[in-house]
Length: 109
Image (cartoon, rainbow, N blue to C red; front, side, top):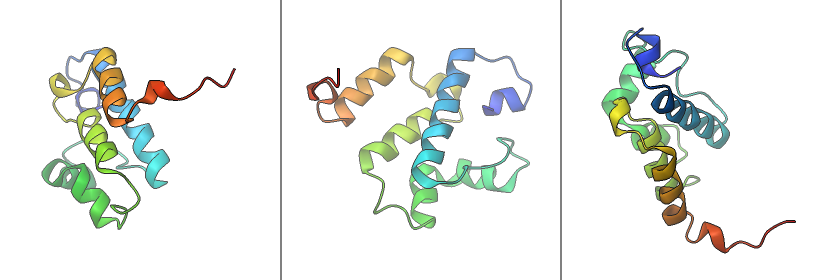
């Protein structure tokens, strides 16, 4: 759950969904969750807040397997401040830029 949900604060469900998307992407890329609880009382989460996604990925020895563009995407999705997370439209724009022409792939159908 997004930090604002864990802390029982008022929250924007769309922004919380962007956090969840970032967590799912992080798990798919690393094979492990970022943290068990997005609370500042949780030491791994506090370290993530202090260090950021790039340093966490580097400290896990995965920086050579995850592209810089993907780290930037994760950093945006996993912003502790919900106002800094992208909207779905902004996310699609980020993916087009990071994907180096994501729409240029031929359709499977």
